[in-house]
Each structure stands twice: as C-alpha cells, then as structure tokens.
Length: 106
Image (cartoon, rainbow, N blue to C red; front, side, top):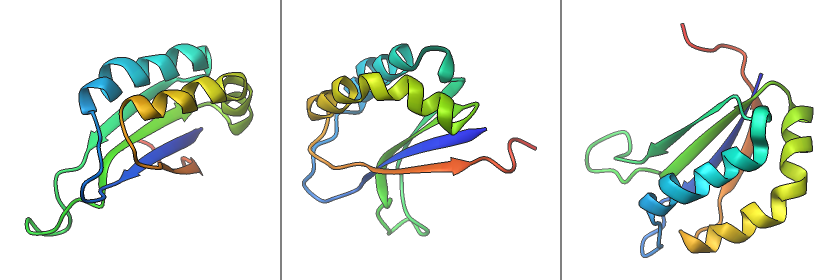
C-alpha cells in the first residue's frame, strides 16, 4: 500500500479555506481517482511540539492506494483539473510525498 501525503505549509498571511477543501476539493479528488483511492484522511494543524509553536502545516491529506501504479494511472488523466482547483481554496504550494506504508494501524 502507498500513501500520498499532500501538505500545506503554515505560512503567515496565507489563505486556506478548510470548508472548501473538505466539502469540494477532496470529494473531487476521490471521484477522479475512483477505486484507486481506497480511502483518504484530512488533518487540520493545531500546534507544533509545544502549545506556543505554530503547526508546521495548516492542513494535510493522506490518500491511500493499493500501489504507486494504481495511483499514477488514476491521477494522471485528472492532474490538470485537480491542480487547477487548488486556487479555489489556497494560495499555498503543497508539498507532496509518496510513501510506502510499512506499518498500518496496530
């Protein structure tokens, strides 16, 4: 299994519409990925290591897929549409990492 993590840096003054992200963008992503998206989670940053520290990321999403090939073949045809929707909820540039999940829930 792989996990595609999309992380939005918590940059002072940046715009991020959590409602749009949850209600419109992520359902769009899930619809376009279809069965390749086993499930996804969304995190909203609260703080850093101490209560005085800002969260490093304002939001993160984690898309779980059976394989890298499954993700790439499902995402590729819709990459432009999904990418164009980013401007509707943020002016941040996301950081993307694709990882192999070596330990799941315990």
